[in-house]
Length: 151
Length: 171
Image 1 (cartoon, one colour):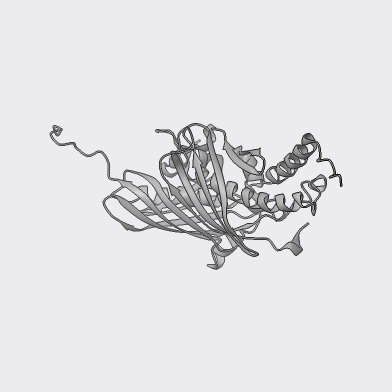
Image 2 (tube, rainbow over the protein chains, first blue to last red):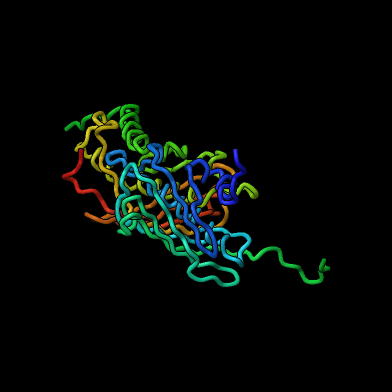
């Protein structure tokens, strides 16, 4: 066993990300790529075997959170608002890959853009399964209160 | 003229509960998260019992934003399907005895879904109710609210648009 990479530790630290089998594939400079395997437990429509929109949104939310944390100004974050648009059904049996980036960051808020692909659309640079836009809180780390002694 | 006697209450309850459980049990992801539905007449309340695997931030700890989003979306889909199923069932068009995993009405498809995170989800049970604000022949708009300890202190709300499955495709 090798030591887990920092990226893997990020996922390990989030119980729900671990439960969905997510992996952090790339991270840095306000961007993140995460993916999730196809799993029959995550099916949303039993008639088609298509993965639940909820599972895709969990991946998008986590990936957006990762992108915020990958921004040099951020030390903590939480989702304020996330809108997901489902362009098409994901192909059953394929991984879902989410890519998120900070579109703009202020002192307190990060504005995110994200896309989710299945394996086909990722390889062909085709139509994503879903796109997302979100607003996340941005916490720049512990600030000194007035009068607090600096160390 | 004598009116026909109403059906015994247990018969009606059993029929409605069977239709609901056929609908709810048909969604694997809903089962994975542990979501259940409580029915009072036609009113549904979704229940999400707390579980460690639903945690997003273990330091607070707080529910994962994706769990909240999925919980709200599933509540909206079930409410919308249930409102359609209810009409068919009560008008006698549909016999719930014939509903099973292989003979379920097609589920609505999510077009878009916007979640408003009002406060962090605490490590406790969560509840949600959805309201179908508009349901046309093809599109529906549904609003959902979720809370934990206090009904009036929502921790998240959402609005989504859904594509109604065409009747011809009904199994």
